[in-house]
Image (cartoon, rainbow, N blue to C red; front, top):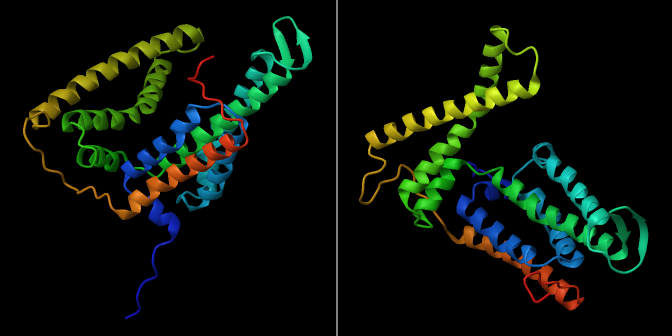
Length: 262
């Protein structure tokens, strides 16, 4: 009998414990949050782009999920370039807009920083199942089961918002009250959605209490959440990317600790 081939690396990464992905994102992004410079953000982004093909997410899904990040990051940099802190040579000035050498450098650092922080979060959580994450938070990180299960139930309900919105819109159109007044219609539908969400949340809370989700004492779990060597290696990989980025910025003298003395 022929032995089946081992799963591809991307598949293995996608199957890792959700807590490992969460911890990897934390150890990767916290050092980038504490500094604002081109070198650390650029090095981290370059390493992340090299590792993304092994994340278990196809290129089609990658662009569908991250296009908003690629769109908003340059817009953030543009805002900083026009209204950021002025230093060095001034290239253009009009009213409150002042483009200078310092504001352009700050804009580039901000844009790279947004990409380096947001992209791995989107890519790694794209392959995370909410139930697996809840299992890991309760069994691996030992968070209170009542809090974890309540958050999971609430997260499951988020996907129903769009369906409820469309149903409300169709209902209002069938009654002939959605033909004019966009702002008034939006506010009315938003309030109706809020009321519907509160009612659904109340029913869900009562149902969960009736089934013993809030009972004290140890809780059993349908699936065991395992955190092994592969998960620790993945967290170490995230820490290594952050360490290389920080070391590169420190060696080149661009490290800018934002919590330091001004």
